Length: 77
Image 1 (cartoon, rainbow, N blue to C red):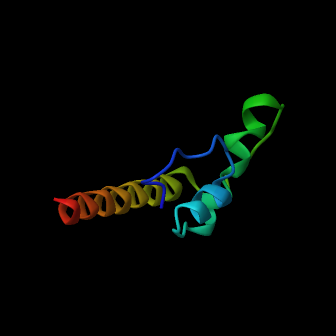
Image 2 (cartoon, rainbow, N blue to C red):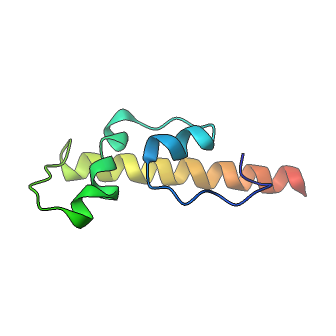
C-alpha cells in the first residue's frame, strides 16, 4: 500500500494497479493509450469497448475504491 509513502509519478495503469496491490478489469487496462499517447499523438484511438460499458466499469471501480478507503478509515479509527 502507499499509506506510508508518496505515490510515484507514473501514468502506466498496470504499474499503478500492481503498486496498489489491486486488480483492474482488462478493458480498463486497455485505456492506457489515453493516459499518454492520445494526449500527445495523433489518433485515431478507438475505445476498446462501447462508452457506456466503459463508463459502467469506471463507476463500479470508483465505488469499489471508495468502499476500500472507507473500510480502511473505519479500521484505523
